[in-house]
Length: 207
Length: 220
Figure (cartoon, rainbow over the protein chains, first blue to last red):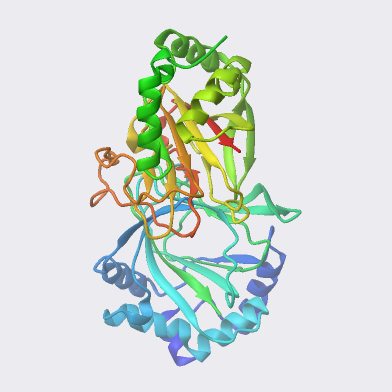
């Protein structure tokens, strides 16, 4: 494991064999390649990240598709820890790891921002497709979420170019990283939050 | 023959409506559109009506209702003549859909929309509704304030989505309530299309089992 990876990540995660297992799971998961990596960061790092994320300026955003709050892109953040986290995702070590896990060629380049879903916030169904986006990621910093609290990330199958029935749901799990391949079939949504708990996450795309 | 409130057929009122529509850049809101009794009867019938759920997740989610009398009201020769009089044009054809929105329902703007010239109308039927529950019909256009259709039963909005030029929100005095615990003031809906487009805001869990009925139509 590289220096940067071991600084941030849970060391139990990425031996050669472990990567192979995760890569197989990523490829085989339906309705499109994805994987939820539990206990992704060292616990103290995730706690520090949440503390720093809460200091960022969140702007409420609404459109036909969503109601949520978001920070500006971390490329421009002045927060030292969040900048380091952004640079960790931009690093060659992490890019190489993601390429091995997803079997997707990455050009480099990361979009990354913090998101906050509060009571009754949502993100309706879409496919994330925009030029250059290869892998979407969400790193959950949501505390104490249970299934009945809503806010699950739901994946829908593709039916002839349109989203069909929902086939997989992941409720926000503390210190877990969701990654999925962006394609015309990557239909997904964030279900409405049904609680006053705050659904914090850091998300974006690898190019 | 079913028709809207008689006040809207008075020549002087009709003239005023035509002037207002023109001055507002192709937009008018007509409260108490139907007579009180007729509105109450139709609302009751629609509440008992079993709808057909239709959903394409990246487009819409709602129930489709059938109500022939309501359709006739909007497509009767008298109504078309009156609406045409307001718009200053002869109406050739009206398309009408009756949709019921409850918790988790919505409609989204779709890329394929907004290319044909048309005047849209929206008519609402409901018992009680809190604006914090969502369900607003929202009109947006790049660089303009969003226009929210007031969430009040028996109101008709007529809006020229192609030629509308007035940049004032439809009802500036109309404030949207917040869900308790959420931060900050109510924000406008972001604009993302050059053409004026509309959508129905997601109905959130605070609506519980309450539903609203929206008659949505296009005038060609």
